[in-house]
Every structure is written in C-alpha cells, then in structure tokens.
Amino acid sequence: MTELISASGYIADARADVIVVGVHAGEDAPIIPASASGIDAAFDGRLAHSLAALDNTGSASALTRLPAPVELAAKLVFAVGLGDPEEIDDEVLRRAAGTAVRAAFGHESVAIVFEGDPAATAVGAALAAHRFEGYKTEGDDEGPPESISVYGASEEAVRRASILAESVALTKDWSDTPANLLRPPTFAIEIERAATDAGVEVEVLDAAELSAGGYGGVLAVGGGSSVEPRLVRLSYRSEAATKHVALVGKGITFDSGGISIKPAGGMWDMKGDMAGAAAVVGATIAAARLGLEVNVTCTVALAENMVSGTSYRPSDVITIRNGKTVEVLNTDAEGRLVLADALSRAVEDEPDAIYDVATLTGGQIIALGKRTMGLMGTDTETERVRRIGEEVGEHGWPMPFPEDIVKLMESPIADVAQCGTGLKRDAHMIQGGIFLSHFVPEEIPWAHLDIAGPADSDATYGYIAKGATGVPVRTLVALIEDFE
Image (cartoon, rainbow, N blue to C red; front, side):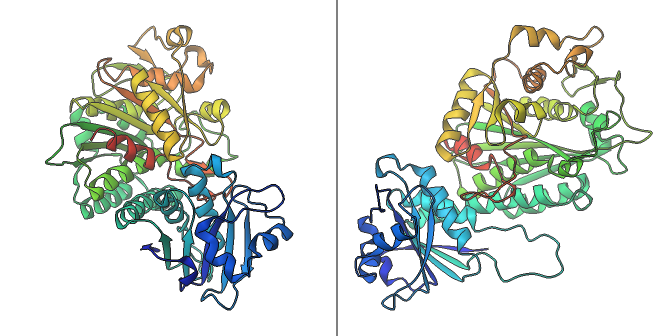
C-alpha cells in the first residue's frame, strides 16, 4: 500500500523521483501558478514555453513529462493541466492527481502540489495508487509509487484520504476477484475478517438460520447453487452518536440468470454482481476507522444464482422476511429478492435512513450510461445522495415512480410481482426501485442506488482504472458524515 504523506515547504526542494505541478489553461501556453514558481525557476522561467511546444496548454488532466533540471533532486517533472483557474473544483483536482499518479507507476516516490484544496488532491492521488494484483504468475516493475507527498495537505486530510482509498481498494479487490474464489461462504469470511480488524461487530447467518428467520428471497436465489447463501450484518457504534444509518447491499457473487439464463456474451462480468455488498461493507469499515459519530448497521445478502434441479422457477411464489409474498416472473431479476430480505431486516432496527446499493438492472446503463447512478426512493434521500455524490465525484440522477409502472408491478396471486407482469421491460430500472419500495415503510427516509454501470469501468481516466471502481463508497461515507 502506498504511503500518503503530508508535506510542507517548497516543492522545488522535494527529494522525490517525480515532482508533479499543476498548470492553468492559457490561450497559447499554460499559466504557471505561484505554487509551481520554484519549478519554473529551475527551468529558467521557460516551463510554460516548453509545455506549449509539447502541446500542453493547461487543459484539464493534460499531462507532460519533462526531464528534471539538474537543480532539482527529482528525475522527472510532470506538469498536469488544471483547466481554467476560475473553474477548478475538487473533482478537477482529484482527476488531475490521479492522472499524474498513474503516469508515475514504476517510480518509487512522488511529490505533488496543486492550487486549490490539497485534501481533494490527496484523495485523487490515494485513489489512483492502487492496482488489482490479479493472478499472473509473472509480475512487473510498473507498480504504484511507494510514497506520495502532497504539499499543503494536513495530517488529518492525509489520514482521511488514506482511509477512504483503502476502503475503496478493498471494495475493488473483492469486486474484481473471480467468482470461483469468492463464493458466498468465502465472501462472508472475508467480510468478517476485514470488519473485525476495524473493530466492527459481525453476525453471519447460514442457510439454517436464514430459514428459521424467514429469509425467503435469499434462500430462493441461492437454492440452485452447490454452496449455501449467507446474510452478514455489521454493527458500528459510536458513543457520541445521536443518529443511526442503515446500509444494505446486494451480494450475488455470480449471476448466471438462473433458469432465465443470461446470454453467454458478457456473462463473465457477472463476477462483479456483488459490488453493492462490497461497497456498503467498505463504507462501514471506513466509517469505523474514521471514528464517525453516527451509528451504522450494514446488512448484505450473499448468494450465487445458478442453474440446477434445485433452482427457483418463474411462477414460484416466495415469502420475504417481512411476510410479503412475491410472484417470481424472471429468475434473472434475483437481486431485488435478496435485497427485499435485507431491507426488511434493516427496517427492524428503526434507522434514521436506509441506503441500499446494487448492480441491479441493465436498464440503469441504458437510461444513464456507465458513469451515473440511478437514484430512487424518498425525495429527501435521493436528493441528498445526488448532492453529495456530485460533491465527491460519484454522480447520480433521481428517477420517478410513474403511476403506470407502479401498476405494472401488481400481481394477481401475490402481494407484488417481482417485475413487470407479462415480462414487460418498460422502465426496467424503475421497476426495480418500485419493487424495493414495498419493503421500506413510507415513514423511513430511503434511497436505492442502482450502480450497474458505475460499479465497473471500461476505461482508465483520472483516478479511475479499468475494472471495478469502488463506487459509491465515498458517497456513502459522506452521507454518513452528513448525519453527524
């Protein structure tokens, strides 16, 4: 794990392999800010000229590598564009820092200074300094830096950035792990180990306890697998807390679609169908390590949706933890069934708000793309998530519950249909949210975060690498902080 360091003084004096400075956008050449004046002096005042000659005029996240002048202890100087100085915000800084740190893989140490909030720079740098190690038998030397010094960042800012980044990294590593190595019982053990290390209480329910507790959704979905499902509960308590937040996550460690089997193309990506569970666990651990003065209870339902003679079927009627019955119409809409159980259990704790996270529907990607979460629930909480997500760089958009789609979810034989009757896929993302609303009383503030797209990235940009993203760990932590 890369060490993040709080640094002060002049960056020109930094003893690091790579010095990173931010430059602002100019018309023909970048503008060198005061924070980089010492570096500019080492280039005899010609840093802007050199960057312009290499087509870097300071646009956001544009990066140029230059050999360091002999006056500097560094080997290289990276100049990263921050764009228009009037439009710099925290996300610009996070992405610029991430771009620089990723470019510095293979070097041992980095020193970085940007104009703006150094806490945001620290978060972007820390998030980028992670790589999923994978399972190759031959490694390489292009790993992340051993240390990153962020000039101007306080010790507290560095501590917070490090904790956030470590929780995001944990979430990403779980989400990127192959499904044969992270089945429900194994995932439960991994969660218990990580949470216990953070001082969080853990309760794990096995199949017999799930049956005794009436968790019909988890048992139905997990019934086709050769391994049993689990439900894991984490409890973080602060003596100073006056509020209680509940987090709920979908943990389908692999989703074949069950009897309503998925097409073969892209099924490999279903190893990440537990990203919602990973994210809420990661956020709970971060809250504990940060010592937030809010009580947090986290409930995750872990199951493997497989095809066998014991799989649940379309036309089945199952009973959820809260006693409501569900008509099953599509076994590939399994996530909402395990979430219904987990939400029902979370409601029993009478929290001040509930946030559930799931890679729930392909409809989310169709409607909002790969980088924007679908938000559903009560107006207060969907707007809170939208606002806070915008602040931390994890964007979401609130969706309505139209009357005709609510009507579509009615069942002639059960309390609610699992999805649109007649297999209708109208407003598929919204159908998922409407279904879940049946398991949260109207008086409890609640938001459902559909992260089917944002949980995984097809490209590397800023502090985001290709693969699992760890979204929305930082949003969840900031939501918890909002209750302090």
